[in-house]
Length: 285
Image (cartoon, rainbow, N blue to C red):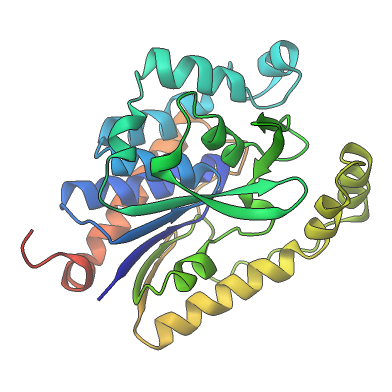
């Protein structure tokens, strides 16, 4: 059976995903295919590197660094989130992030990027550029980050339309799925407000599709959740989500609570050890 790992984004809430992926590494569980969106794209690469330190440190320490989120990046980069600081300092200098290990993985891994003119599409991890600009684009949220330009085209976070990349996993004819989301079961995404849609219209005048896609984002999210629930009902997927409410939001969270959320991800996986291993552990592993 062709297996797939499917990762939602979620900003700081991605600490939950990181904990889940650390458990997979510790238990030597691999997949034929894998898909990541936003923060989930970076954590996917760390998983493919088989590096628990990357997962833990990036999701619980650096993501809450005042140099990365808040006033300091606003003054330095004119963005609320310091994407330049993350991809030009934290990853290459502090963490010595070795993307070559992820690119060399036998897993057919992809992450979503939003093309400002054409919408979301998926890039293979093995095709990440040397400066990781495509991965940077995959994490760059609209409004709080600048459009990332690569080879003459502008890109942003693929979560504008594909918050949970389950549809891409199905397109690739995977048969069994481990889906990890950062929101609790039953979460309902609200429609974009008139203010948000107006902001999108104002900021991205050259790219009218951004506003249009944001207007139906809540519908796309529910469609993706419905697909996952249907796969679970057909016994084709295991769906992981935080079993407890931890006070961490997309852009706000302190280090103690991020560590709690990371550990929750690890513990939630451990609580379902038997069924996860039975379904996804390779027989020759």
